[in-house]
Structures are given as C-alpha cells and as structure tokens.
Length: 262
Length: 314
Image (cartoon, rainbow over all chains, first blue to last red; front, top):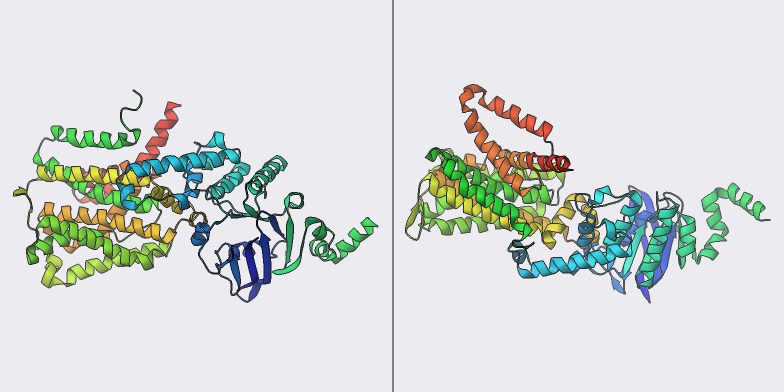
C-alpha cells in the first residue's frame, strides 16, 4: 500500500526552482531515503511534504487523501510527524516533558477541566506520562527522563527528537539527518532506533548524508540533484548508477572511479 | 504519610498563609490599602505571565483589558443600573471576546511585531476611553459605585484586602492547574519552538488565542477591582505606562514563575511608596533599584534566587 505520494511537486524561492517536478511514492512499512549533494533540495522536499511549505505546483496524498497545503499540525493529527536537521528541542522542559508534548494529539481535556484540575486531567496526565516513559525506553533514554532537556549530549538530543515524534504515534515519520554530527557509536544507536521503529509498523522517510547508514537501512533510495529527481531504486541500483556517481563526485571523479574499478 | 497533601498545592498554601497572617503585622489601615493594591496587580500579572512567561507571547497593551474591566463596573451600574458584581463578570466576558477578536489577526505576528501590535491595541482602548466623554467622563474619569454583595457593601481597605487576596489565590491556583495540563505543556512547547510544537499536532494559533483570552480576563477582573476599590477611575488605568508596569512586574518577578508574579507586584507597588521619603529622587531611585535587580537577578527575582538556593544546598 502506498502511504505517501507526492506528484510533480515544485516550489520556487525568488525565481530559483528549489524543487522542480519531483514525484515520490512511498510504500507502507519501508525505509525510504532521500539523498543528494548539498543544496539539492532534500530538506525543501521534506518541508513540502510535512506542510511547512506549500508547493507552487503538484499534489501530496497521505494514505490516499489529498493533503496539499494542510498545516503541519493538521498533518500531524493525520499521522505524519518529523524531526529537524537543526534540533528543535523544548529546552526549558525536562526530557520526559518533551516527549509528553508529543502525546498532544492523543490528549482530550477541555480548557475548563484543565483550569479546575478535574480528575480527568489527572488521569490524562498519568496516561501521557506513562506513554512518554515507554517511548523514552525505546530510544534508550529512560534513565534521563527527569533531567532538563538542555543538559543532554548531542546524540541523545537527536534521539529525544525521534522519541518526541514517535510519541505522537505517526504512521509516517520523516527524519531529517538524524545522524548528522553524531559519532560512530551514536550513529549505530540511531540505526538501531530506526530499525525498531520500522519493525513496529511505522514508515520512515530519511534524509541523511551518512551513506553507510542510508545504504544499510533503506528499502528504496531517491536521489535529488539541483531540485530534480536523478534516480530512484534499491540501494544497490543507486550505488551503481553512473549518473549518481557523477553527481556526487563530478565528471572527472566518476572517470577516476571507473578507472579504479577496472 | 508521605502524601498527606498534594505537593502541587504547596506554593498555593504558602501564599495563602502569608496573605492571611500578614495583616496581623499591619500597623495601620494604610497597609491594608497597599496590600490590596499589591494583590490586585498580582492578579493581572499572573494572567500576563501565563501569556508572556509560559507561552512566550508579549503584550504591551494589557492595560487595555484593565481598562475594559474598570469601566465595565463604572459604566454598567452608573448608566444601566446593573449590579457591580454582574458588571464585573460581563466586563471579563467582554474582555475575553475582545481579546479573541483582536488576538486572531495579531497573534500571528512574532516578537517585536507582536509587541507593537499589542501596544497599538492598548493605545486604542485608552483613546476610546478618553474621547467617549459622554459615557466615560473623558480625561477626568468617572466615579465608581461601591460593590454591594447580598446587602453588604464592600468599603474600606481591609475588606478589599480580603476580596483581592481570595481572588488572587483563586487565580493563582487556576494558573497553576493550567500549567500542569496538556494545554500548559503545549504552551511551554510553543515558547521554545513553535515549529516543533506544530509538527507534534499542537494547534499553535488556537493555543495562543486561548491563553491571550484567559490572560485578558485576568486583567479585566483586576481592572474592575481597581475601579471598585478606588471608587474613581480615569483612562490612565488603560494607559501605556500601566501596560509597561505590568510587563515590568512579570519580568522582575520572573517570567514563567507564578510566585514571581506576586513578588514583582510587591516590589513595584511597595517600593514607590517606600521611596516617597526621597521626594524628587523617588523615580530615579526606583529606576536604579529595578536596574540593579535585573543585573544581578537577570532571570527575575524568583527563578534566579531559586537557582541560587538550589546551588547552595548541593
């Protein structure tokens, strides 16, 4: 089943076509990676799909329904969540509270009940806290629950962002460079977390520069260059595609690479 | 034995104890008057702190809502013969509706732009109150009938001390409740990262509007109290300086600290009274003291001191 379809998406910024007629189709349960050189439009494509930008052209369908132009919060309530390349942590809150915010779309208390601290609010807080603790456990942060979020190390913050998004129980999770700036151990931890997410039935879309991680974990890889689709296929197909090698290494570099392979 | 009372309620109980015990040390009725003023302002400051300290949205026009509340209890009984307590409720509702209507367009603005837009709103209310002299008495203001409840007339500073105290504690409790709820968490999230709150499904625009409306209602009730307590009201209640004073109380006491709201109100109401002995240097000294507070306790009095004490205990 196709969970997300983007059809000929385009967006321009001041005359520059940042994304130019890109179509993707993502099957449920997959890890779908988007790669490309710097400035090729990966994050822009993410922003279009997650509702942060509205495309000038094209359509986005989530689970068969057209969602083009919906705001990120409405998309989140339809089961699409994401993380950010530059961390967006709630730094004044504790680690656990960060994840509790992720439960927001599953919380149902009215403002009057909240002001009066009705028993329903106490129950909701308890349920949210429990659910958030479970999710923290999944990304290996259970021990850090009560620490201020700002006190965590970089790699842990990356996992905290994933946990927060996971807490909203998304059907589709977009991860924008989850391993950027992480060391080898932290990257391995991210790899493990992504695998466990997929195993639990969430579809993952990944933008990532760490090629080892991408090639290891992805079912399909979509390659962008200058805002256009360059190639798409399994990791093996993409790896051996001459156009992809050229985009990454330049024409000269690809000749060198060809020589080296001879 | 561990949980006889909810730990959550500890600050409320502490504040209640202080409000109840303090009058035993008041040497004269004048102190009741200052106490009542502190508590009335603290009520408005708690509301503004919900907006500024928790949700991270500034308002430089909050005195506009003080004005709506104040003139509701002046105009309602004066022209329509409605009882004051009813006018107080109607004023709070009216403030809520106005905040809702004004908030929809302006809460989309951020930072300085929001500050200037709210500033404009405050000026607008003050100008209307000044110019509609037929109803409001213009710049000279108008007198406000006494509050009468079940045949008992609220007159005297001590009566208002207790009324303002009870209301402040109620407002304090509601604010505390709200902060420890799903909406409270969403508001704090908005403060730190709007975009992250959005992608987690928080309807940011609606949450901002909700808290702006609630904080306007706090200000409105405080404005009504101020008018009923003083017995006379002028458009200054809605003026720019009042708005700035409220913001200063929030920041001085501590953004996001509900106890800080009371402390901020105490400092900025009591200090000018205490400094009157310095005559013409009163304002200058007040400015200096506030500067010194902000330099040494830069996150506001309560949060900064709390951090220091936590540091000492280790």
